[in-house]
Length: 317
Length: 298
Image (cartoon, rainbow over all chains, first blue to last red):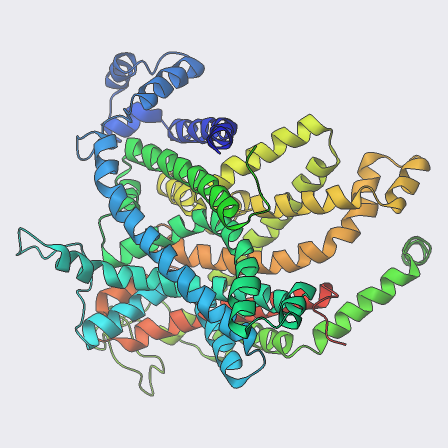
């Protein structure tokens, strides 16, 4: 097991290097380069020259890249132009918030979609199935940003149950766990509604296929209880493809959470990135792109390991 | 010219293939999902492109005495904060959203198919490298890259098509490649090779028609994605430059009037995007059912 994890980690190094190359390249396609970006549109050529020399930007690109990569490995992602603060520490403050939305969202979405999909498959072509299929189509096609707006309209403005955005009440200097829950519920709800639809539909298809397999018939013929047949035999096998799907879904989840954070003004990595894109704060942009790339690759690795845990046919050696 | 291609078609395409293609078309046409999807999409295309010929509202004239008006006889969908006609803006806004979405999806499909075909046919090492590039780009959430490029270059509609198109073909390439890997061991490919067909000929004359099913289905979903991306970018304020409206931008600016409960500004663009997405997803699912014999009902 340990050997397998190590092996997969080593295999993902080229991809991670690739992500850093893209991150590095991004800042160098900016017209005028990083110096111009740092100094703004009114920079004099002399000053640009000075900055270039100061930051080693006049060296050949490969040399610069190696230097930048060395800094990255030491956890140094540069300094934000706007906040004048280390990008690494900015990301480290914001990342846990984003990851908690994504993490909690994924867990809830999985539980709901597995339940929903299985029930629909078991009672397929009933009224319940049709209504749920229509509903999932509806949410599946609904853009995150509009879903978020409607959720704010309903739960925050009309019902007044939750705050409409932010992470804490500005009048309350020491927000507790309750405040965190209040502010995090609606963003998570948006993410869950947006993802459950697709995963639930996938689960329904998978379960429908498994319920008619020979091994399910054999299990029934053995006289096993129906609950054992469905829950232990069919369900366990039908869940497998969902785990692979999770690995593929990670990038779009991060894109989705970016939109959600902007709508709810939730100070996570997405909002940090959006602000940086508006302020042309390139070190943050580069840092967030690289870190999300890493997270996606690690998430895929995790999905692979999880797959092995639930599928006894896979052995690590 | 026409007789030549006709005979070519008759002699080249196996009879079985044309039969199965028409069967797919039959399956698609008789699928209620497909009918609903085509109707929904046709409605919005008519609304956006033919609508302005019938309803002559101005998208830019501000009616300063009638700002944030709910729907009335004069303004069927109300007015926005500058007193501009919301219905007229909805119609014209649809044009840009649909055009950019379809064009970007077409471009992404084209790149993805060619890249996938090349990767699938190439020697092992070239294939490994080409796919590794795809893996890397897939790992980075595309919205992040798009936002960055947009913030730097402030693209026009045409440039936005190129940017979205060139950043969303990766999944398509991966899919086409895996299809090619299984198809290229088939007898008809061996036969073509034995007759001395070049790699290019095998790619585009033998393999392409056979991956078309996968391509068509996924191109549909690509359209759904691209329209959503355009709307999402505009929503984030980094899509298309004003004054030409588009649905995403209209939705984004409506957010400021949420507390005034300006529902006539919030719902129409959202519903329009929802109808496009629903229609395109319906069409995509109907196509998938048509092309996958396991899903085709007798």
